[in-house]
Amino acid sequence: MSSAAASAWRRSLRGALLRGSPWRAGAGPSRQASTASAASSGAAAGPAAAPNKVPPPPRKGRLLTGAMIGLTIAGGAYVSTTDEATLCGWIFKSTELVNPLFALLDAEFAHRLAVIAAAHGFVPREKRPDPPVLGLEVWGRNFTNPIGLAAGFDKNAEAVEGLLGLGFGFVEVGSVTPQPQEGNPKPRIFRLKEHGAVINRCGFNSEGIVVVAKRLGAQHGKRKMEETSSYPSSNSNVKQGGKAGPGILGVNLGKNKTSEDAAADYVQGVHSLSQYADYLVINISSPNTPGLRALQGRKQLRELVKKVHDARDEMQWAEDGPPPLLVKIAPDLSKEDLEDIAAVALSSKLDGLIISNTTIARPPPAEAHPLAQEAGGLSGKPLFDSSTRVLKEMYILTGGTVPLIGCGGVTSGEDAYKKIRSGATLVQLYTALAYGGPALIPRIKAELAECLERDGFKSVQQAVGADCKPKKA
Image 1 (cartoon, rainbow, N blue to C red):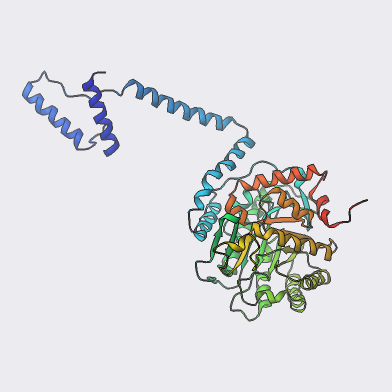
Image 2 (cartoon, rainbow, N blue to C red; image 1 turned 45 degrees about the vertical axis):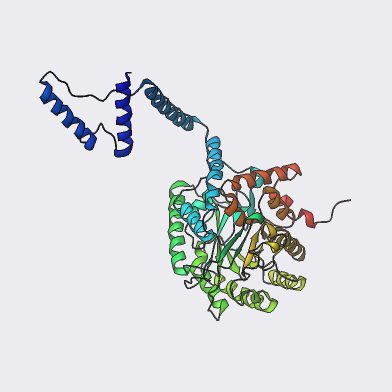
């Protein structure tokens, strides 16, 4: 190519980058000026003069363009032919590139963005089956794995389908209050990144029962239609999946900050939301609602559980019966407090306990962090030891007869395994998801399966409470 032609090509390429493609009709003043100039010179030189032509791109440019197109086609062909498990694993792995960007955002804004992404399907969807060793049956329902998402992430049930699609065995929404409330003033969520922890004082910010009931009702109706059209009827006493899809849905109930009758708030939640729940949770352990933790006392808890039980049982239920009722407790309890709760759980026939909520303590090394003095409950890695001690204590106090959900500081499959060996039938996480993103979920499940198989357990249920039982001589 001549130097004049190369110069003309570079000028036309620069014009394309700055103004749009010069080959479109009427593509800007340079094209018009060039045409006008050609016409002018043609008039001066006579009919024999020919208009200037834009030379073809250099050969190297054509080769590079062809190579890029070829790579794109080849990549598309690979994706279309690779097996689903490999592709699914790659998609989950790729989220590790995106998740650090969320750390650059304000904590509450990042949380909101994550909920929106899950609600609109902009998150990976797990297509691979869970390892068989992780499957278990609790409350007459099959869980494909024991790893769940704790309440607090999807407070208003906006993203249930997307979150279950990530591969959780169960998802818990809420806490939901009867009336809408804004919660505490912002800022109210603080990251302690170095310690994998978060302090929050949200204060049950909720859109209220009416809004959440509408969302859950729509999801429930969709699920029923899919069951009717896609699944054959089963005579099994163990329910396959839950009311929101293939996973199990829990609904966590809270009270309004200004309410003077806590029991009435929880009863209202039962009446409005229990029909959509695979299990219900009475949350009496958030440190961010004044007076809430006082409901953990023996007398107060017994009266509260009775009223909520009665409200649930007076409703009409199909053959699968009412949803199980659980209570979520704090990690900041004395031995006497734990004994009182265990006594109520046994005498009132509670279906389960969640251990635990966030802590008002600042366990090391979080105590030295500059943000440690912020008011609110701390979650994440520093909570693991204290919440696991309470879990183990409660398993012993209840004789292993009450299903327990272990929650607090779980960041790996080994952590989940320790919770199970300490008495947890199921395990929840939340803060670890905020730091690790969706890629954390399949990793935890794989690690947990390895732990079980390493120690010779054929199922999760065989390992429950293993560290609380007398060792054989």
